[in-house]
Image 1 (tube, rainbow, N blue to C red):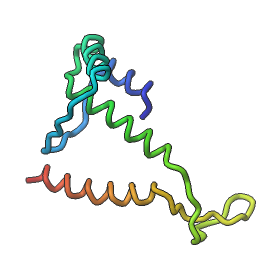
Image 2: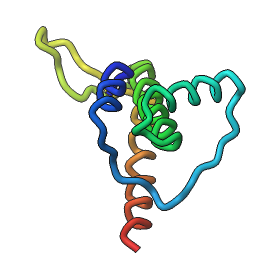
Image 3: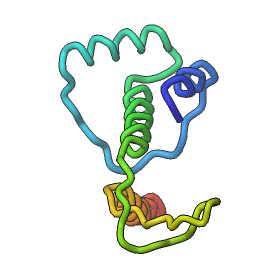
Image 4: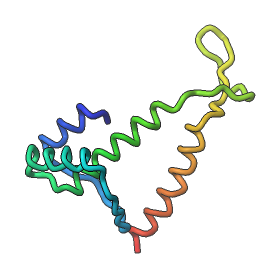
Amino acid sequence: MGFRELLDAWRAGGTSPRTVTEYAVRLPLDDAARLAALCEMFPGRTREQLITELLSVALDELATAMPYEPGRKVISTDEQGDPVYEDAGLTPKLLALTRQHRKRLQGELAK
């Protein structure tokens, strides 16, 4: 989801499941002021919902921005028959660690 889709979702309403753990942050003044402005603009959303959804979109954007780094292992071929190499960059590590932590967090929700 991008920021445009997030704005559309805020207008439409709705939320997704949340973790048991709470995260506390202290914001820079300018960010806190923008967050307060968003709270006024979208009164149906709590401050926590806005922060959560903004963080989610930022994390998606960060994952998308991670560059592909070709590894040594050929995993397939493209339409022209050229080899496609595994990604040896940060993305596979992020995905593997994300799956690992998601499984742990889901276990906490089940308790």
